[in-house]
Every structure is written in structure tokens, then in C-alpha cells.
Length: 218
Length: 244
Image (cartoon, rainbow over all chains, first blue to last red; front, top):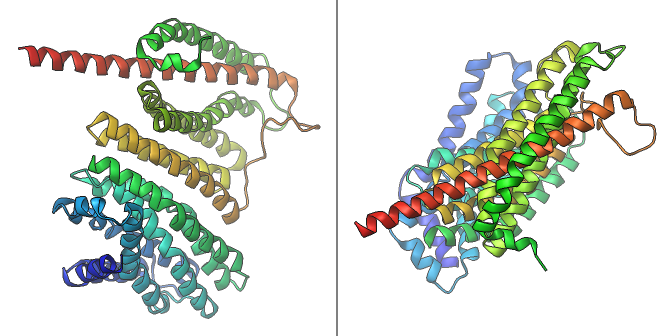
């Protein structure tokens, strides 16, 4: 399983595009929003938590279709499905690799972009914390969406239609944790709920995703 | 002893639904027409809301069926996953667009009512928001059905999407409650003592709700029958081609 994780990480870093692309997208999105909304710092501070969370969510979505599609095309997914590792474990490891290459860098880069959006000082720690706690859920839910659409030729657009509604609770709780902290309120309830969604999806969704993969490999 | 599972046999299902569909369709038409005519022309206008209150006779039944259609899809998907009855999967498929339409009717009638009452067409209220999200879930479900060519694969994948989607739709409902305090009033009907609606409104409303439930039944049966016939036609055409 660790070998699979290392292989996926290597592929993501070396095979161009996957690793930096999400971060670049995140950066461009946060630059575009002030250009569209206007440079008023008060307005930007108000919408910063939401923009950063929506940006992280879209950046995650962008790299999802590579999660199983490449392995499906060259047949290594069939090998993984017949290997002694349970397919549920394969899904979990792949979701973890996806998180390490997109969610984690996004969470670490978010404070820098928070400065660009004039995010209030007390919100920085909750921002990083909520992204660290919330983005694993985005990766696991995304793995489920990718498993559903892996057999389709143009599954990318369909997958965003399937996955984005599933992201709603994570987005709401994650962004609430940040914006409550930005207003000087206690955001720990929202933070705990974000962590709860991550724990629940990480525990259950690999099974649903593996089920969908088995159907698609049938 | 006849069991419910007998109707998983398409022939038996077609025979039963052959008379059940027109009966429920006509009953639905009768109930909805009676309820709406009663509601629109023979009830007093509310002393504060005026005549706009009467949109409730469309709004509440469609909202009710929007949620129940998803619940029916969930149960039909479970039956398909556990017992592999094709009729069940096709019924879930047929319910998708109907549920989406009901959700849309509830949203639109709500907007038409909200404009004079709340002074806005749309408000990011938890109930409104979760209905909009429910609509998005319906769209994804329908899109997944239409994207996959193989019928059994499509049935399996949409069923698992329906299961996962139900959990996340429920989560979204509570997330929306957490996120914003509502403008929408509480439940329109309640068994709790001191409910605020008068029987003059409740009686036609119940008629409309029963009518919408029967309408949903008739539409699902019609959709399922169409799917079964389409599948039979496809099988016949394949057989013809193989013989030729």
C-alpha cells in the first residue's frame, strides 16, 4: 500500500501538470476575484473566507478526473483490482495521494492568498486549520465521483455536476469556521463539524467508491 | 400467499400497472381539480396575505412530493442493489425527472409567493437553499442515468449515487440551518396542538396533497412502463438482427 502511495505521488509530481496546476489555479482565482469585485478592502475582507474555500474546492475538482482515468486507460486499474490489496484500500490510498498533492499544498498556500484578499488577522489560523481538516473530505468525495465516471469518455463535466452538490456541507462548515473567526466569533463548532464530515467520508466513501469501480471494471 | 416481490416480474407489473395507472391518473386529476377549484374560488382570502395565500395549494403538495420522490428513489435503489429487480431500477429512473420537476414547481411557486410577501423573489433561507441543492442532486442523478450506455451499469451507479447523495442531501439541510437563520415559516402542517391553519384551508390542501401523491404514482408508473416497453423493443430488435 505504501508502494502504491509512493508510486502515485511520484506520478503526480513527475508527470507534469498535476502537482502545480491546482495551486496555480487557486492563485489565479484569488487574483481574479478582486479584479472582478473591485479593490475595496472592506468588501474583500468580508468575502475572503468564502472565496478561499470555493477556490480550494474548485482546485481540488480540477485534478480529480486524473485520479482513476489514467490508470483505467493503461490497464493498471485492472491490475490493482486483482491485486491482494482490497480495492477499498486502493481508493483510500489514491485519495490520500490526491490530498497530499492538492489539498495539503492548498492549505499551506492559503494564508499567502489570504493576505491578498485582506483576510482579518484572527482568521488565518482557522483558515489553515479548516482547510487541513476539510480538504481530505474533498479528496475522498472526489474519489467517489471519479470512480462513478471512470468509464465515461467525457466524464469531466458530468463529474463536476455530481461532485459539487456533495461538497456543499464541507464548504458551508469550512467557510463558516473561517468567517466566524474573521468576525471575532467562536468558530470551533464549525471546525469540529468539518472534521466530522472528513472522518465520516473517509470511513465510508472508499467502500462506495470501490463498489462503483468494480461495476465500471465489470 | 401473494407477495409484493411478485410484481418484480415485468409481465405481472405491466398487468397490474395497466389498470392502476389510469385509475390513479383519473383519481389524481379529480382530486387536484377539486382541491384547486375549492382552494382558489371557495376559500376566503387571508386577512393579511390576501389571495396570495392560495398558492399554498400548489406549493405544499409539490414540495412534499419533491422530497418523497427522492425517498422513493432511495428505496427503489436499495431494492435494486439488494434484490436486483429490474422494475425497481427503472422505477427509480422514472422518478428522477418527476422529482426534479416537483422541486422546480415548489421553488417557482415559492418565489411567486415570496415576491409580494417577503418583498423578494429569492432569499438564501435554509429551506429554499436546501431545496435548490436537492434540485442539483436531481440534475446529477438524471445526468448520470443519461450518460451511461449499459443499462445495468447505469442502474448500479445511479443507485449508489442515490444512496450517497441522500446522506449528503440530509447533511446539506443541516449545514444550511447552521449557515443562515430562516425567513421561511415552520412546517405548514403539524400534528402538534395549536396548529395555525384553519380547516377551511386544510381540507382543500389535503385534497391537493393526495392528488399530487396519486399524480406522482401515475407518472412513475407511466415512466416505468415506457422504460420496460423500450427495453423489450430493444431486445426484440436485437433478436431480429441476429436472425437476419
